Image 1 (cartoon, one colour):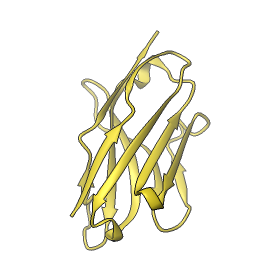
Image 2 (cartoon, helix red, strand yellow; image 1 turned 90 degrees about the vertical axis):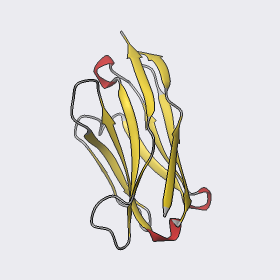
Image 3 (cartoon, helix red, strand yellow; image 1 turned 135 degrees about the vertical axis):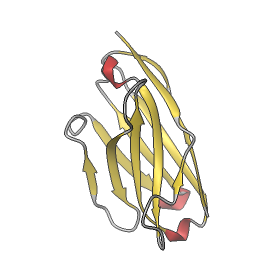
Length: 119
């Protein structure tokens, strides 16, 4: 199994930046993609970005494409999300998730990290 732990959330003013981390452990050799999602109070969880764990493909939701950067360090089994020019409406709990071999759905989710953007 894969275990994921997010960190790096916090309180930031509008226009500010934060970098989130997602550390993976366990059967990381089964991972082939990692994702960031977020869920604001009273809203559905939404996709933010994804990165291939084996290759270098990256995809972003249009709302964050010009401001967020997803990256990874395979040697450290860690994925990152650099978030710039944050907006108050991006206040949410941010989750990372992993796609693993042999599972059609996500094989692991982190516990989430709170990001609060003040206006």
